[in-house]
Image (cartoon, rainbow, N blue to C red; front, side, top):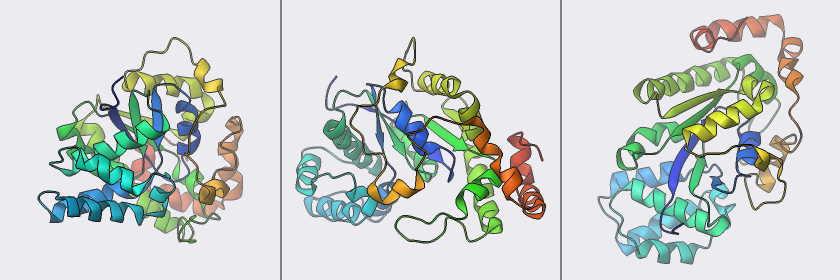
Length: 287
């Protein structure tokens, strides 16, 4: 496997949909490396929107912007090494730049991996443009019943901002509907290049969802023994985010997703259902 090539795919997820658990497990495959979420896609895209090309000074400026993101700092990459690496490559667009950052990350953490999955909710915004250059890229979506999402998240606080995930259930519903509408547009445009995974299916038939994922990204695996491995290099969860993922290393418990039925008042359950009704019906969630 050449250190100068890798397939890049995206994982876009709404909050509290099991994305970290899912990535922890599939990253155990020898050919898969997960690049944890950070804000680098937006920073890279915005930088190229303002500049038509990258001089050495511009590369240095953009790398500085990347390192201003705390979650990118958690990758523990060396700034000077990234700059030298980028200067040795021809960069003509934001897609090339992002690809090289992913390649650099792969070479540091899992140099023999054949593909990298970038984990970030907002990656669906940039998927269409990225696919124009890297045509083989795929995208995986993780979704969940919005009532369960709210029940799972309303007491939690963001690791960096210290703010709650959602101000209230109306705020959550608004963001959920926007996200799902964007998801649907990509699904309709690229039906063979997308995979929608419902959190509830992860709980009830995890191996089946893993097999679907491997099939999408063209990894042939006769069995799923790799899921049981525990010793492997990864940094999917930063120290700041540990409180958000207390159960990520535990076994899945299928009854956990029924907690919202007993925890949320019937008024909130009904309100969330009505506000998100178009989305929940399409996702086949029942009242």
